[in-house]
Length: 535
Image (tube, rainbow, N blue to C red; front, side, top):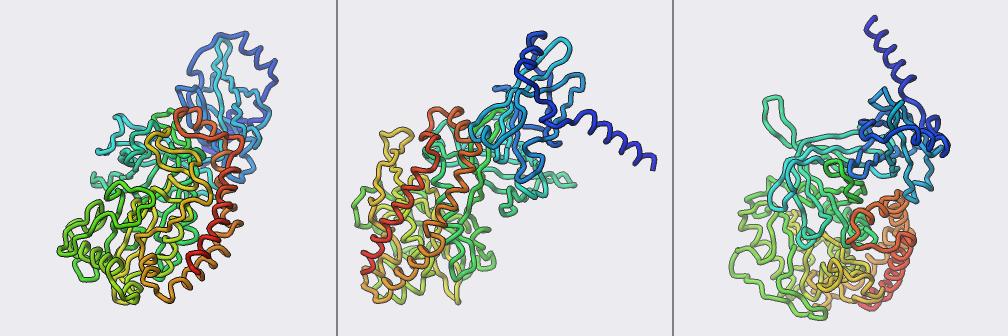
């Protein structure tokens, strides 16, 4: 009882003497200036400053604290303030935190002072979660570097606000790995009681529980929206609509990243497409119904727009790997390559539509056929070539079928790859009615070429369903409006632009208005396009 009483007294003393509301610490500009003028400047008067009991992230280079507002909390806009150095006082030059000042990326001045000295700091407020990664060595692409990871989760109702883990980090991507602002792959681990290292599965920001995550940079995207929006559109609308009962897709959530305590900018946190996401059945390995995951992440040859002939022949005489494909699951499997070649032989050289239907999930095949063209995926499909795509062999009704999953969709919605453009990306190079070719290296295209009597009706029916549901103007705008708040209303876009001035950006004043207009115009054009190919 005595321990409880003493503990309660200590908590009471600490709370009521050292935590005060933000608004109670606000002073006028003249008072603020008076305190400064009577003292000499000194750094590091405040080491740790907490809002509502959580330490703020600190950017030492910019002498700036970052405050992430907890969603729908009554104390978000007037947080309780505490600090570790009880010999100093703290005051602010703002009376309150408002949504407008967050949107405008307006900083709060914080003065830390005692009788002789003062220190001045900035407070940045954001609506996004915050991540800090500590590393001792330079982060490489080919090798993994040790890291310490910390996430502040500001979501309403989050079970844990602060999540930390040891892990490994490496640079992710091909061309994007050469950019100043890089994307990363994260893998978490922890030490067991026996001193062994094992993977540490975490559910970050409500995503699947795993030890493997991605931090996407969006350096070459002027609105920082395309890859994130495309993944969400596919995940919400198309990924789960298959006969296999799997979600063959992923999604991202926006965050702001710090590296070794230095602000690093706007990022998107997501998870990979892997055997777990595709629900690969390990018990099929070594059998004739072996499930596998492939990735096509390179062009076979450099494509030219308008080229409608297959880029190269596939050697069907053996079970050797196909060039530019990576087997992500059973690396030494001959069965995997045999099935992939059987699949291509069937759709490319077969004359029986039923054989093609037997090797595909129809809804999924139609979806990816239309989807890649809708988003103007010029870096995903040109002529009879494609890349940035996953293929997965899955068991269905006692046979293997193939399912496609789009990936890496930053060069879309008007952007076009160019070796001479800044960051290789031309801004709005394409018109909303351009790029009229669907994904030709697709079973749907071959069914059309075989004049299958059913396929046009299937396409019309599927597209009508999509446009009345997840691909409707209203549904698409709802997704984009949510992301507009994340990117712009949080103030993160302006901060990212300041942090990476050589990146690709548009004017933050227009936010996503131009992009949303472009997407709606593209959908309107696509209605006509689908009607033409199905007449």
